[in-house]
Amino acid sequence: MIRHRRSASVAASLTLGAVAVAVLGFAASASAHVTVNPKEATQGGYGRFAFRVPNESDTAATTKVEVVLPENAPVGSVSTMPVSGWTVAVEKRTVDPPVEVHGSQLTEVVSKLTWTAAAGGGVKPGEFQEFPVSMGPLPQVDTMVFKTLQTYSDGNVQRWIEEPTPGGEEPDSPAPVLTLTASGAEPSAEPEAAADSEADSGSDGGGLSVGLGVAGLVAGLAGLGLGGAAFARTRREPTRSS
Picture 1 (cartoon, rainbow, N blue to C red):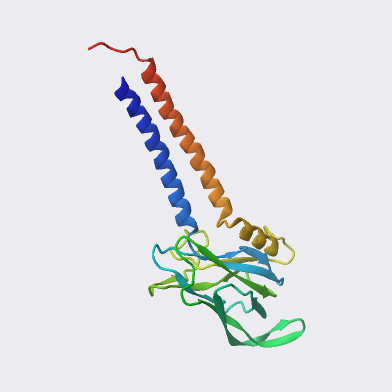
Picture 2: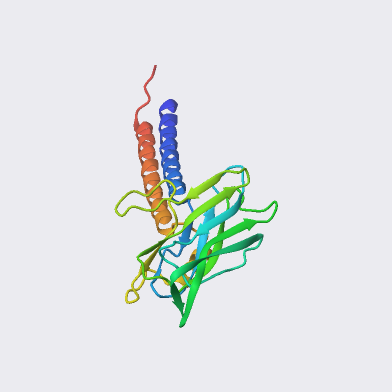
């Protein structure tokens, strides 16, 4: 009798544990890459964006982040926000034809941004860091792909450079992608409002994480309910004498 009760209880615990591990593990793998936030903006407009860099190493810190601006989508005005404990280097390239910004013709645009951590600093294991950038006017293209290199203190380099394939699965090392909508259409969220709200919440892939969390909770409660039902059945069974 007691053995049956223990078995039902253990089964319920294992079911709930397996669901939690599967859901949380999938959520981590789905969000643990460099992203640009917000992910949508309007062509021709200006916006505040943050390159969000999570640390995937258990032992090393992220000490350098290099973001390459796409050659096919030059931006006339790019400025960075100071990040405590980091310095930023700005590289430029010449463009032809020039890029117009407020009536001025610019022949040079920013091509690369490199953030370097101070000695002993960086993004520690289990942490992430955001690197804010203001850009505009945004080009007349559908997407901007920002190929990114993430360097760790142990010398390893993670190359986030794979471009997405329309209708295909997400690459193993996807580059951050900014989707641009025509000026007559509204993006899913205002750039600055979305950036501020995500920074306040500290979430990554909020919709996906919430959905996975709810699904995991429902599945876990279902598993617990099954275990409880099994436990109740064992209590109703008559005790047989030996």
